[in-house]
Length: 85
Image (cartoon, rainbow, N blue to C red; front, side, top):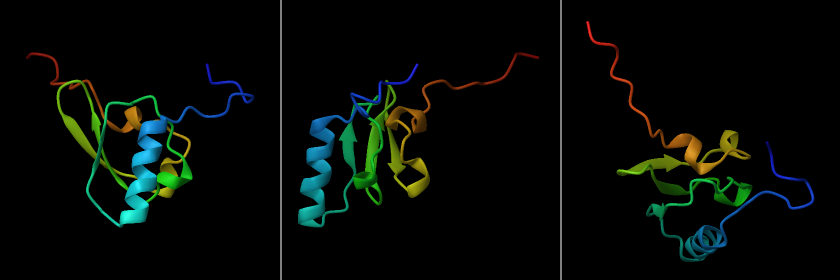
C-alpha cells in the first residue's frame, strides 16, 4: 500500500541534506546510507549512493528512470544459488 497523497513521498532528511551539501561542494563520492525506504526524488539524479543491503554496501548511480522508486529496490538482499542437483 502506498503512502497517502496528503503526506507526500518519504524522503529521509539526512540523506537529502547530504545530497544538497554535495551539490554545493561539487564532490562526486558515494553517499553511504542505511535508509532503504527513502524515495528517490529529482534532486538525487546524477548522484552516487552506497545503499546497505544488510551485509555490504551496494553502489547505485541514480538516473531519471529511478525517480519515484525507493533506494532499497536497487540493493538486492537475497541471492538465489539454484536448486541442488
